[in-house]
Image (cartoon, rainbow, N blue to C red; front, side, top):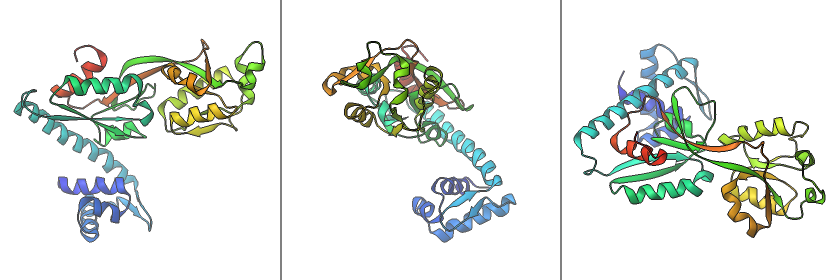
Amino acid sequence: MELTHLNYFLTLCEQKQFTRASNHLGISQAALSKQIKNLEDEIGAALFFRAKEECQLTPAGKILESHCWRIKQEMFYICDEINDLSFSKESALTTINVSLFLNDLEFKLNETLSALFQEYKYLRINTIISDNIFHSLETLESDIGIGPSINNVPDTINKIDIYSNEYKIIMRKGHPVFDHATISLDLFDNYPFVFFNQTFLETKTIYDWMKNSLPSRSQEMDIHVDTTELILYMVKNTDTFSIVPQYLQRHLDDLDIISINDESLPLRVMSIYYLKNKYIGNQLKQVLSSFIDTSF
């Protein structure tokens, strides 16, 4: 079994179609089909369910895919380790790929990334916007991922908490809840909640809190969006409410949006994620140390 064949197989896993995969690889569709057929013959099992629109992995294909990614990871790490022997940290330009959600490229995070550009002359930080930073790590698209902290991290991934921020409940000036002398959480039962969709890591954290703190509230009228700007727009112009990090406070006054505190709100913790078996080269150690303010 050749590494080239495994690379063809993984590309087809990602592209899910022979035409797209062959274009991505720069080979003909017939050549790719033949290589996959040879791989299936060598393994002794079909790897894909071939359909008109897309190819889906068979049970055998799923097993091979998980092992192939580990093989590819090890090859990357071998190269990284050899490069560390071949170059001093002052002699070569190194690129660190960082995957993150678009909405997290803000506040302290973008300030930290900017500082890294200035501090390390021979280090290039390449940000990759992803809706699944764990997949980005496992497929070697990125070296590290940065996003909201969660408890159920995949077994193959390490997590380091780097900083935190409080959450606040926000609504527009003139929202009907302000007609009440005292604002209690149950007043929000009758108003739509606008927040990120389920692909965002922090969505589960917020909805778990709402389940405990607003148990009688229905989610039927909730609105799911994919940017902070849309959340603020909806809150400014409708009777919705939302929950956002405290660092957005400086933008709220200009939008006529009011924030309120509640002691039961969770803390928003940001974390660095990376593969447990990843080789941590000298340059990546510098990046991790910069985030956590300690040697790594």
